[in-house]
Length: 308
Image 1: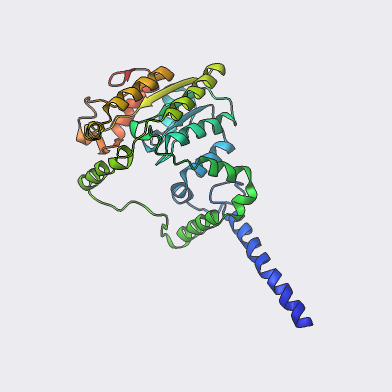
Image 2: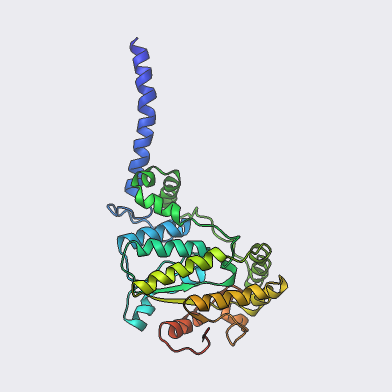
């Protein structure tokens, strides 16, 4: 009888111990700074940030919301809030994500609007994001973890990233997957081939237009300055629009954006977009172009950018 009781207790105790250990491990490591209690000298900016941009930034914004935000994908994510503050005298929070989608831009706006009174919103929206077939949206998942801390501390995903952080701290080995290192020429070719992922199955996103109009209505009602910018892409990528027979949709896209809010367009054949050396790949401009866009958009000195 005693052995049976011990067996039952062990059956109960072992899972309980595992669950408690998971909670304690995630609470102490806290890979996304949910509680900020312990400082273990972890490089969360390197590990956690790259593991989940959306959750990392959502928690950071919730902890310290700012009235001025930047939304978009990796092209917008590279804008440093520091130089923008120097240019404008206003603090910005960059809430753009690598690999972000238009649907995530929309959800992130409402997430931010629900946490603070916004003043300035800058949205970067290229044509390859403006696609009803690209419905990836991980922002609700991030919001769920923020709203339900129990799910955060018991999440298997959070546990994995906690382990990645500790492993890097102990052995200086980054287990977060990264793109393989290749030459610029090779990567350029690969990126151009990837356009089939966006344009090969394109459907005009009437729902995105509708949601952007809702955002504009909210901004007008609440005195928020909304600006949409179309970041530059290299002409090699611009030509893909015609290769896939999407010129009418592309023209309509710019027309619709201009009808929603002030729209500044950099994505046309110009001195930047014709220059191979101004880009790291067909999608992403370099630091020099970034500095010039900052002066034009936030400094109010349009030169290459044109208002639609």
